[in-house]
Length: 417
Image 1 (cartoon, rainbow, N blue to C red):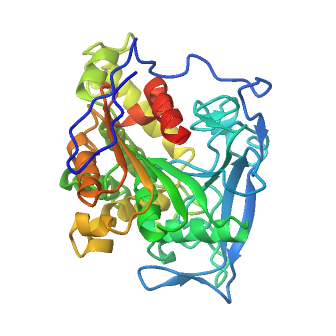
Image 2: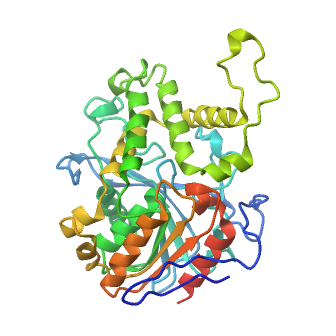
Image 3: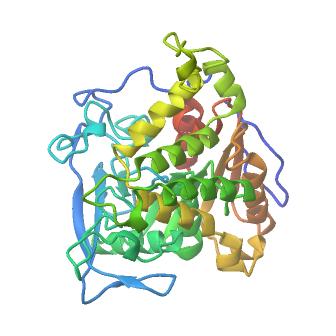
């Protein structure tokens, strides 16, 4: 498999070409007793900041206490030089690999009989080999998967924060991850890797902590979201904010804004796919049980409608609407050039000391290849060691999760050096 290129003064666009068909996804999950699985896992929680010693936020506010949920896989080397930090995307969590031992008892039924979201990449003999690396993944601030967020109790009232929760940013998430590493006694990171919003965290790590990061892998992400991406997020938030059950974010204990959150997820999910991928998967085929009566003519008729309806309904069972508002806004506001280079991306990239690999996907229209290439170009203009690869794929933005063969190959090769 070719397509890996270390750039000189000016990079050339390079595509990843496989020697055979690309594997879209795992045909089966590795069971917990498999030699390639990390097995049964159990999340850890740690309080990093207290009510009297709150965490200072980029936007000027603060919050305390702050509890962080994380998972760890593999064994730390005596020199503590084999740490890989994984940053998850918008709706992700710390459960990146293995099988959650306490999924049922903690009410996280969506994890029952299903491994972590990047299980294909993490485990013995896999690209992120737990026989070689010590791998960490933590849930970020403002989420609803164990780390303090809008659904957490406000110590001043004993009730969920709701919209009293302060504004958070990508920089806040990265600084909190750095505090977690400090508490665990981990000074340096061999590699930070993330896809989508996780990729933006990886970029921020390379910028905010250049002395701590040796390598950085950015998958399906760029230093800022496009105007089109901002527009999609705005419509998603609008649907939540205008759901009659939203009640200014104080819906805990009552019916949640399920319709609004489902619509936001359905819209977002379209941006994770591609026209070619949707045509191949659904075409214009109708459901076999599509409504036939005139009164049902606006019900679900096409298979693609049924798919999106399922995605929306499933999402509201596991995610919090307020968290969606906060996280999507943080995604909107992140801009590496503004944060570190006064609007000049090349100037911002002067800070970076790590080796960087940027991987884009040909049909991704949420973080299109041209934006990912611009980041690689800014790095190369500063003569930074950067590898840029465009993977041909019909699976859109989600390709960073489902194209396991090319992504796994690229991770393996980049981590060899």
